[in-house]
Length: 220
Image 1 (tube, one colour):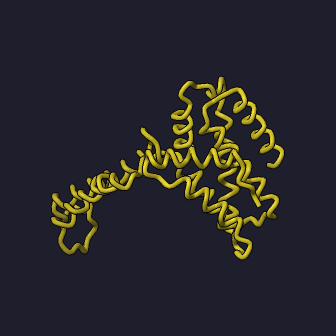
Image 2 (cartoon, one colour; image 1 turned 45 degrees about the vertical axis):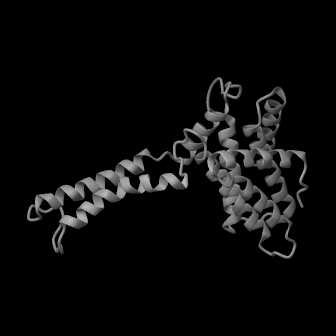
């Protein structure tokens, strides 16, 4: 089992503070992971704990001021209307169609509505950053003084984040079955990585990041 030590409590407190500010539930995800792992009666506890950790690592970059995809519930209506309005117009002007909607035999108003609907969806898809970009922008947002900014090449935290999240995903989907010892080691690595990312940067956190990266490289 993973003991609730000072580092875990500090990370939970940090996440709770962010949750209160952004309306997210990241601290609950971490607590859920710890509770699931601690449930000795649950035969699927490792996979369920991994699922909570994977969700935490996946959702964290979308919940902060200026996030590339800030999916706060109160904003969802605006996001949906951007996509729905062209389709609503299409529904109003279209009748039962038995031909290609792009055919010249279709009224021009219908063709225009179809093109607008497709364009809106494609623009929405193109504007949504991938996981790597979300993580990158998130790291930039928390590095207020740029202490972790890499002098050349890619930020090593991105590789660590992607590797740890990928491992949790494989475990959550039952594609990998680690021993409890292996899973606890992975959980500790994730907690330490998040602590480094979210804590105020100091020489100690820089040193800890180096240790996390070296340990990850050894474990593959």
